[in-house]
Length: 334
Image (cartoon, rainbow, N blue to C red):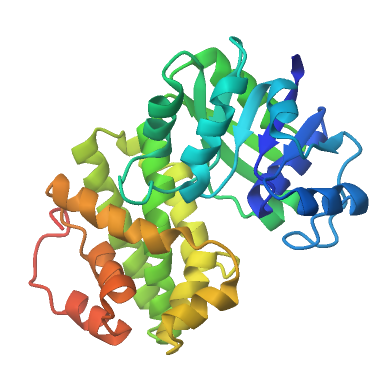
């Protein structure tokens, strides 16, 4: 096992982008679950499906074998969709060394259980391995292109947080550390649901005023849920909270926002999802976020309406009407 090498598990757009950035400064392995796709990446030295035209650094190696990829590095960074997260953990459980350290950049909640990725990791791997979560306002394409980016590395293990941040930090990327793993995960989860709402308002051509109000009140929903669950407000007002929220709500590189835009313009849900062609995390997350809100008795009206649009067939204009017709109340209350 090489302590100076890092392995990225997940060769989608975000995993590939992080691998590219890491490989500008250190030896990096990239694994994906489709052998044929990995062979293509190795032969062409680019991910032509998700990040066309961006060449791989010389220090980025493609590894199609999971066991080899895991055993090659002390530090593992898991970057797979939330629905595949538990399966990957299960598959690597018997391959880990006693010195292994696990990080993830997967956002969202596990479908069905509503659990954060950190909880899933603990169930599958226990607490013997240092763990960290990487999050923040980051689009894969911009990271891969080397545009300036800031993100947060959160861990209950300060040495691991600092060392992983040092791996990511430098040149065009600035990494901050935190010990609020819950807050970082929460911010990166709920923002996907709110980005769909933002897209819907713009798809309906409701104007900039509406978008600004939605982002602001959406942040209030995140903070209320965070307060109830024990996250820190300063985390939710930082990169992993408001930073990620602004990014995904205002730029069309966000798949969640694009789904909302399509729905607001009248595109049928199944057609919109097919046209995007990648996982839209906010679709399933909306159900789990609403369940969390009900469990913790937190008022999250925007998230509730997004859930109803996605899973109950509520017309987007009716969802907007439902929000606008709510009773007057103090802004500090909800």
